[in-house]
Image (cartoon, rainbow, N blue to C red; front, side, top):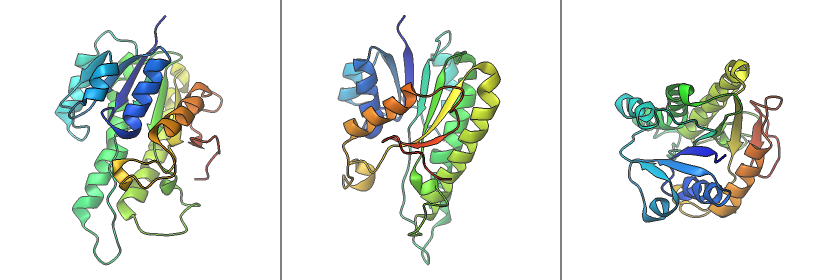
Length: 221
């Protein structure tokens, strides 16, 4: 039976790489994004465009678009990075990163609870920059805080979804060569996606709620 994966922010970067890899593994890929791309259109079974994950009306569209669809894998990937420097922090930037990186994945997951079933998996694409222990360089106030909040949400989701047989992965993709970091990363989106999928394949109810690097390293909170 063909499995179905729903991916937010699937039109480029890590999201597109995940969509491509999962399509190659035989998944039915449903991409969720504000605007699609030719690459996504070529590999996705369905693209749900015009979705702003910070907008309640957009999120409310998702269960309608996916009515009757069993979702085996939900990947909350859409993200935003601003560089907030002490002395010139803009509160609107902090708010925007919290909306996209933390609140949106929680609300998307809640909106699609009826599409998830026993054995389904939820993956949250977070960052090791949300780790308190790992923070040795400071800065990036909004990004760090939003990813730390996402990690907390992910842990609670993992606990709350156990009775339904749904497991949750909290995943750092690595320092990836994407537009978000001006293509200055250490690994390609494809390498990141392959590692992330390995972690997702290894996810179960026993290790649900664990914070992993795409390379297999367990990360500190």
